[in-house]
Amino acid sequence: SMGERNKRLLFDQLQQEKNKICADCSTEAPEWASSNIGVFMCLNCSGIHRMLGTHISRVKSCRLDQWADDAVQFMCENGNDAVNAVLERHIPVYYRKPVPADPQVYKEHFIHGKYERKEFASPGGCAHYETGKKEGYLWKRGKDGKQFKQRKFVLNMDEGTLKYFIKPDAKEPKQVISLTSLSTTLAPEKINHAHGLQLAFMKDNLTRQIYLYADEAKVSPCQLNILFLMLKHLIFQLMILKRLDNHQGKQGWMEKTGPKHTEPYRKRWFSLENRRLLYFEKPLDAYPKGEIYLGSRSDGFMVRDGLPAGQTEHGFGITITTPDRDYLLCCDDKEEQKMWIQELKWIMTQPLSDQDTA
Image (cartoon, rainbow, N blue to C red; front, side, top):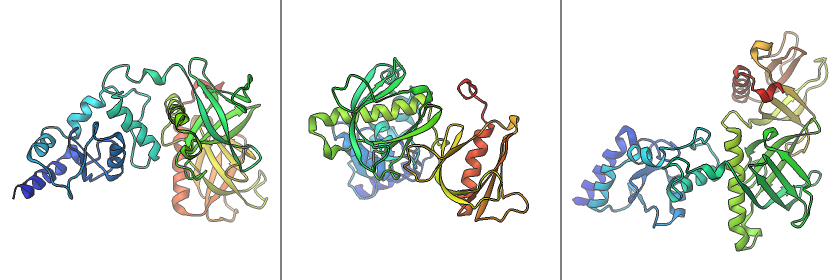
């Protein structure tokens, strides 16, 4: 039948190299498509395409839906490579296309930018990320309490600052954060919110962390657009500015002993921020108990698996060697140990930036 023939043609398209991964996040074996754009995508991205509205993207299942001849013909004439060559032609060097493991909010932002705003189709389409001032309201976790309270945030790209204010009409900000000292991590699991964000920055020579989220349920509809625009700009401008990649923001529990290596091992929450490995008593503490600076291998910084001779392994050991001392850490499982060592080694192989040596 015609229906069967169309299904076969679609599945032939899916077998082609160019269509074997999702057009938007590179998940393997996509089974969904946008019949008016001409791309194949994974189930998750198909949900985001639906959010765009049918005037932008008409989503169909290659397996479950009926396909008209002309729609199949259109898919055969286009496909992921051809469409991406146009719509992703001018992705700026600082913007990273999503990968399967990225948080939902990152994929949403990319897909809206790519198809609705067509930001990557022409040169300069992303210029609005690089200049100007954005403000809006986000929920911020109190330094001492567990409660999140609404705060006004102002991101000023021209000034290079992020400020937040306790009250909307306050003249003076509670905090002015220089964007050069800031690192940012999406933290949905950590604060149990889909749009959670963790910021780390230097204050009085200490690393301070703050946790934010945007919550659509607690704001009026007119605030909603500003808030989401704000949150998205905040997350993406910070990510873009810091060229955030998968080596940022590795976190988790490990055990650590003291400088003499005879002290009892204590459980600490570790968080990787640029060249600093911070450790906290609890994951959401505003300030770390201490930090380990990770310099370059050429300056005598090293990491290896296992602990020095004579030390009892508490699980799976990691030794970080710095010019001053060795730090001994232990992970609960082999996989975690491997991931930490991989991240730490990667950082030690990177050349020091001017900011690192300042």
